[in-house]
Every structure is written in C-alpha cells, then in structure tokens.
Image 1 (cartoon, rainbow, N blue to C red):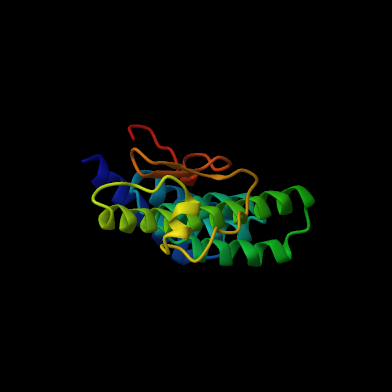
Image 2 (image 1 turned 90 degrees about the vertical axis):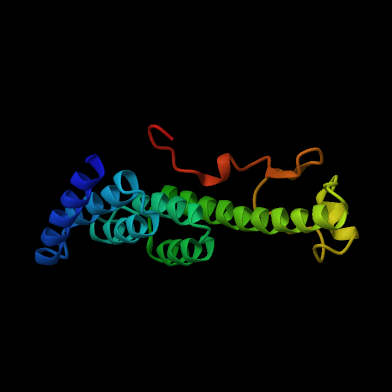
Length: 178
C-alpha cells in the first residue's frame, strides 16, 4: 500500500513536471521520490542532475553520483561531474566535485580488483590473493593500479574482501530500514 501511494505521488509529480519542465522544485522532489521511496536510483539520479542545473545547486549532482555508483555506473557519474566541474565557479564546490570524481575512479578500480580477486580465488582452489601486488605478479591485473585517492588498496586474504583506506562504504546512500 505504501509503495502504491508513492507510485501515485510520483506520477502526480510527473504530471507537474510535464507542465513545468524548468521547475527546480519539481526536479529535485521527483528525484528524491525516485531514489528514496521507490528505490529507482537511475531515475532519481537523472532528475537530481536536472535539479542541479535548474536550481544552480551542484550538490544535487554529488548525490546523483552516489546513486549511479550504487548502480555500478561510475562512468556516467564521472562524465556528468566532469561537465559540471567545467562550469562551476565556486572553488569549494569545485573541490568537492573533484574529490567525488576521484572517489568514483577509486570505486571503479575496486570493482575491477574484486573481479580479479574472484578469478584468482576460482583458479587457486578457494584461496584469495594476499595483496594487489600478488594479483599483478600472477597476471590477474596488468600492474598495480594508479591510486586516485590518498590511502591504499587493502586485501583481506581470509575473505577476499578488497577495500580502499580512503573510501568509506563504497559511496553507499543510506536509507532508513536498510
């Protein structure tokens, strides 16, 4: 019942959007409804990026980039933020955008390393690599990746988990009851 009501509310907002496609308030509200209530991150990210432009508030695109990261679409998030970086004059916002781009690049590398570690584990009878350097030495990756953030890539050889010391929670968006 609650989901149905949120679908109806979002549909009503969509009607308002079609009548007022330049409305900052409509774009951000629809984006919020999509990602928060309906858990449709891609649609939410699209509307939040529109809101960033319409409202002249680039921080909406920072949230949209987290939503895209959850969809494993770092490339789109990096593209949108790179374009935003070129047009944003506020130095503080520019720094936040550049930082998020580096976080997204790091997340993309992490996904690559995790896939390589899974292949390694399959080929080595359940044993995980002890380090990123071992993945490189054994030919699972071409070499140690360039690190876009301060910190390092850390491998937990007992579980195969790989994380980056400078990246918290893979840019997850937290919601209640999650």
